[in-house]
Length: 229
Image (cartoon, rainbow, N blue to C red; front, side, top):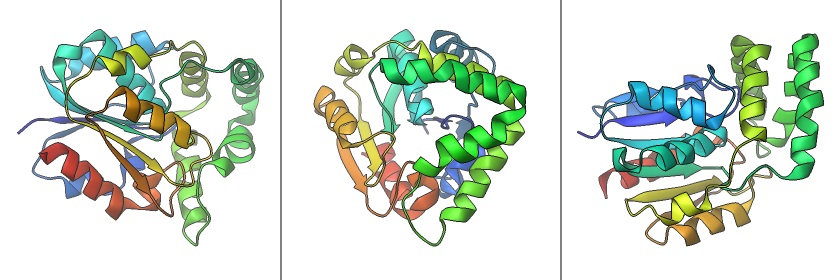
């Protein structure tokens, strides 16, 4: 059975995938937390060093951006690709400009405030479970720490555009987003779907940027279909 490699979003760990890996058993699942380099190229090299020879690859947000870098470096090893709530383009100038002061605040003792006030409130759809998901997100971020925040921020800031990489991919592909995602809106996903016309585009209603936690049943169903088709 083809192994599945999962890459979570920025300042998230394996908990971001909730119960999805267990629901996909007996498929072997490997979690890769991108923490040890400050470029997408470096993070991809580390992932490929330890990954199976061939695998299915799924990433959410920063995890999707890293998945595209992995595909660029080793397209022959990625059999299936799932991109969730992400963006194939390079960082916009206005977001690039915000990264350096954000990094400084995080490194100077303000990581919790940066995550709580500047990032996580924009992640989720409204609903009764929002607070619990936000609390989990903050716990994941604080567990990883300000050094990881700085490295991941630099990797995102300096990432290349990967539209050509997606256009060259021919394997089974899934493009999925929470319908209320404000961080990576619909046009980014329409673009990825157009670049990979063989892909399936799935909109998860009632979810924002983290459908794996906001709507796990719907997200699991879409991933299972992608893995089996």
